[in-house]
Image (cartoon, rainbow, N blue to C red; front, side):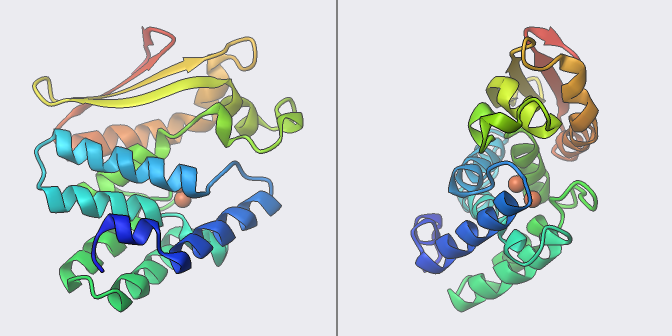
Length: 219
Ligand SMILES: [Fe+2]
Ligand SMILES: [Fe+2]
């Protein structure tokens, strides 16, 4: 049972993703459920695919994305490391080749910005995909938008796309922000650290990183 599709419909994994998302809902965080995990995996896989990585490496990026936030079921604090250990056990139990288990474990263990580092291509792709998932639909309760900067910024992002230009060796994050809801400065207030990590991750993959907000290049 070693494919992304199997894991995507695995009841134990879906239960863990739900539990993690419920924990984060209870402490006031944005949506971190199946939608975020599937999008992160899909984008991470696509980044590596566009850069010419093998089909299996792209599959592992999708798997790392699917599983990257399950550690939140243990605790938000240290969730990258707890999630890595959980993923290690889950993939071992499902008979993944040991080298693949290690690769996914390393990527998940390095995705949270406080301790993140693009130490492998898989980790770099996971950081880029995770940190660029900012969107209106991650806000759980519209009433919090005016009091909570994270909710406000997410709510204001009406479109977010991460693209790779292999020829130009460029990874581009393009955002549309409704500046009536949130000024662009507020985006930077909470996302500057994440954008620096995206830049480092793109560099690890041999690319430059560009950030375009409302048709203006900012990084
Ligand atoms: Fe996370
Ligand atoms: Fe995440």
